[in-house]
Image 1 (tube, helix red, strand yellow):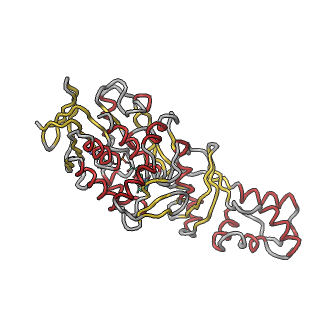
Image 2 (cartoon, helix red, strand yellow):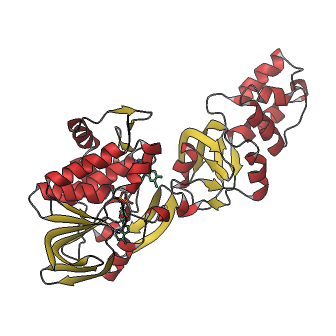
Image 3 (tube, helix red, strand yellow):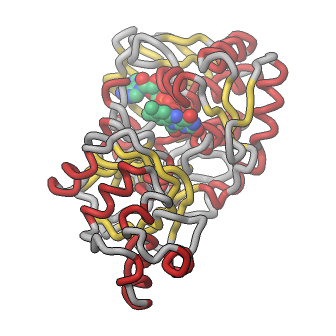
Length: 392
Ligand code: FDA
């Protein structure tokens, strides 16, 4: 039997960081992961450059049934703490947009940094390790695994959520929580592209690749960012962001956030009354996008002089408030995150320890705390991992 003070299950962002910190506190720690490689999501994140945090990360950027839960961890280990560590390791990075920090070179810089921090803490990292049984005993926990039996005082579950099963995602965390009588909230794919009803999908597929800045809104929440038309539906940051707030209702898209199209149309009508509406619309959007919009919204192909104020307002409203009904989402296959998971009511926000199960901790994406797109999810992994490491 291998004995450790702390076993961490999951060698992703949260698990590796927590293990390194616990090890550096003098605890003997080992990370177990069933995958062949550690940190696979980190490696493919941010298009291979890992958007490792956000300069403006704050509790408002997270979804959770208890929006206050994330406050403690985020304030005790902040984005500036993590940026300090990245600086210590001399990793070059840049701000891409909206406070999002990316590696200049490669996401592997972050994985190497985490492994170096683990080494500094004397942490053992074991891959290809299947955990078949978890049991609570008087001294802590006993684990049966494909690599033998382990015993530990503190057990940290950092096995993430359900997104990207092909990268090794499993419901392990939820099963352990349920095994110990803890409540798990229903899960849902988040930061995920929308699929569309067949007719709309076919019309938009013709212009896949086109990107347009939009305001995407539903459930009293809006994001102004780019929308990308794809062969399968709609994606891009604006859509990924709003998908996390989507419950099946129509999504409203303001297709031109910078101009008042009714005013612009009226001015244009005065100046160029013989211009066709579709040619006017092509001055507001990329030509192919404009032509497709005219078809989808069934806009009249008439000179501007034939439009009265009411019709102008109506056309502008259609473009500023285009309501589309997604057919669904692409699901966990492509989702960046999993919403829901281990109910925060079951955990101490200060330590991440289960309130009623001594020595059992949950961190990272397994917990019902989900960030926006833009480095917020990794920051939650670092912050929740760090606080747990202070108590394990
Ligand atoms: P994570 O999923 O990283 O790690 C869990 C680990 O547990 C994995 O190594 C897995 O193999 C292991 N595991 C699972 N089940 C197990 C079992 N039964 N037994 C043993 N081990 C098990 N966020 C961000 O802030 N910036 C970004 O740029 C991106 N980009 C991005 C791109 C893509 C394509 C995805 C899918 C996601 C992102 N994210 C992101 C989200 C981010 O990757 C995610 O929030 C964190 O990786 C979550 O970290 P965790 O450590 O909690 O889980």
